[in-house]
Length: 135
Image (tube, rainbow, N blue to C red; front, top):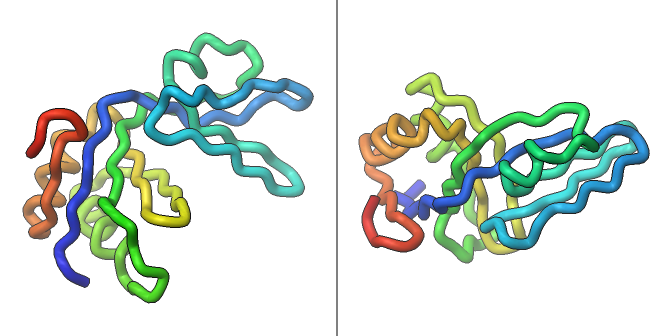
């Protein structure tokens, strides 16, 4: 896999499991919001402050920082996530991943962001800040 460019977003996100019957909605101000549903569970990814203040969440994990693989990525590409996740795993950094039609998104614990950036750069990826250029 070629070297990738990843963009760090400033906002902190949460991964939550709403209580049964609760209707929290992801806020659209985050760089990434998501609702994932299976037959037995519902997971939301949304702004951390919004999630932490919502009593409708039975479980709230975070805060996370967001790394966006700069895309769009071709569906035929292989090894994209492996090339990003392997260096993070070797550095002992846990992740939560999501994908959109155009790219992949990696959430890392907010306190691990500097170590994640270091590990990704050591693996010869480029990491840039969303607003300020290179991070």
